[in-house]
Length: 213
Image 1 (tube, one colour):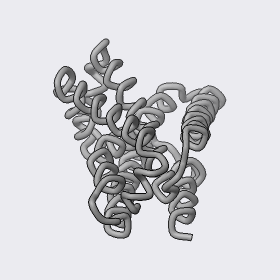
Image 2 (tube, rainbow, N blue to C red):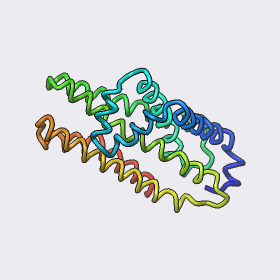
Image 3 (cartoon, rainbow, N blue to C red):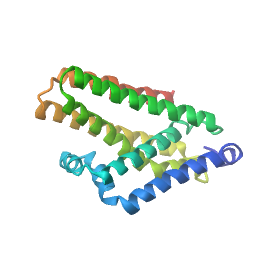
């Protein structure tokens, strides 16, 4: 993004949103680093995820809410990165769509769990589905700052790297959900594949297509 265009149109809004993002990261680093680190590592290794679930308390609850707020802000900034003159209305529109999407995913998973009498598995599915997205949101913070406020237009360089990070997180998420679902709970590979295609892989592909085309 051209920094001059950014200054002329939406510096106040983008600056405020990035300040909020770094403020949230600062809170996580200063007060909840142990739990935040565990949440991040849980995206890559099951034993950390199991440890995080066992530590379900007021601290992990706060980390969950803080990382959700960071997710909605950073993902909104990411989706609007090619719109140098976006305003509050555009941000609010994307922000609400993200909330609706994650709420819809949550309701679908919980409803399916109740319908198939696998409520415990449904709760674990929600946890692992949101876990990687929240970890990705934390990782995106410095790259968003560089993309919006670097002295030259570097989106052509930062976006492929952001895409690579997102793909890695989605691959790890899909791998662990597949492995846990089949090995630990004996779920059919067909059901897991359908879930991943509909609620995980398809949205990622659709968003990526919107960026590249």
